[in-house]
Length: 339
Figure (cartoon, rainbow, N blue to C red):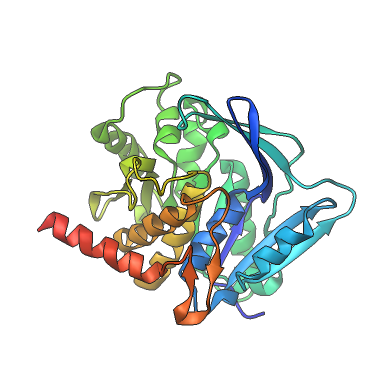
């Protein structure tokens, strides 16, 4: 295995999906690591092994799922845990409003940390994606930075942090503000961002309110010397990319919410950040990276679970479509929209 460009740390889950109390899908592959890795993998057709995929698998994790993931040709590492079951949960959709969901864990999570990586991964990876609490993210970044410093590396690590919804509240705003200062990209969704400023859920979406809330983080500082960005993923409303340098930039969703291509939005936000990471590594530009993220999210919502890959290299297709062609079409549509 060579050096990884992208590593996601967090959980891989197997979910049962219920609508109106009835189970309609069982053992659907999910979790932040799965979808963030997917997002990065979509943009790595000629070098898929540069994406590290770490799964901590319980003793009943389906072998057929592992074989399906091997088709992605990432650097897949499966750590079998013989005395624990696979991480499982139930995702419940409201029968009348598919945008309303609840999630219940059936088992304890099996989360990956830097301890589950090789020294080569820790030292050589270009970008890390974290889905965790402020305290855990700080511990992970401190540990990874210390290890890299001991090997003569410093300042070349891109850290992308996706907060956990259950950890977002006015009570936890302060630790989130502090930890945002040590990551390059802080990315809550719009509901999570709102939760830092109010315990009440608003029914309406307001771009100006989202920008004002995001500004609170920028004023405190995101990244080294405040040079990072906040990316607010807002589902069908698109996404907000905001930094001290570029101000506020909104990008629309690739696929409109009313499109029949929208099947299940689970994991789209995670996939966005995997795609964003690859766009940032390629361009160094936050807005360009967000275009990659929006395209990655669009592939995540077209089915329950993960999309199908066929072909290889430059001829690779996901759900029968070229990722780069979709990116080019999206970029072209944005240019026409602004002209």
